[in-house]
Length: 260
Ligand SMILES: [Zn+2]
Image (tube, rainbow, N blue to C red; front, side):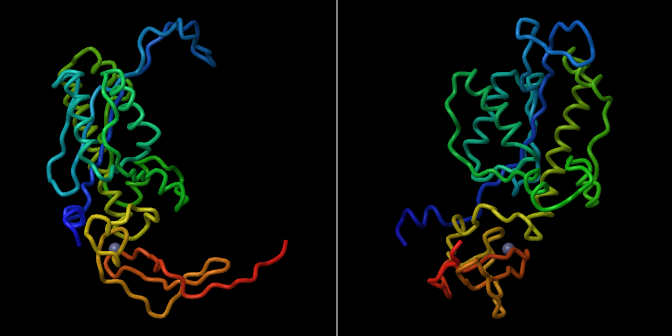
């Protein structure tokens, strides 16, 4: 193992859980129902107001806001965190949080942070389960992980935009709780082997024969096999988290194919 491999393969990935809150778009409207709003009616576009973020191996949850830190410093810090992350855990992050932040990076004259792998728990929930609702509040509640912080609805955003200190304290509590809930859901789903395309932990631990999710080398085979339509592989299960994985080498392959 060369120096590069040694440097690469020494630990667990740097896993960051993140959640942002945004301001509403503000526009002149001529009615309430079924409106088509033109760009000329738009007074203010949505922007990132704050975010909370937590490293998986740290106890504290960080909170940055334009109220406390100023918009530019908040965005610069989000950039630094994403730049340092190997894995980003979110609930709908790739479609929402990441894209909002990337717009802010561009507007701030920044390039993209160095790449990370996304673990989007909304995508996992949609793909694997049929919950009545795929909202974080519902899924977390059903799993007994706790609830979101109750708030005053749209009034909280109105008060926050007006700079109300009490509203900002509640906003902070709400955003931080969302990150904690998201991380709890990650621990629940990853800890029970439900995240099928989790970035392979072995890339960071340096073990080429470990559980893709948690990095444990305690895998049991028990003579079970994983089959595709024309190939057979050894099937392994992690004794720690229950993730199923297969060995990369082919145990058996057939060379005839059904003619269609
Ligand atoms: Zn595992």
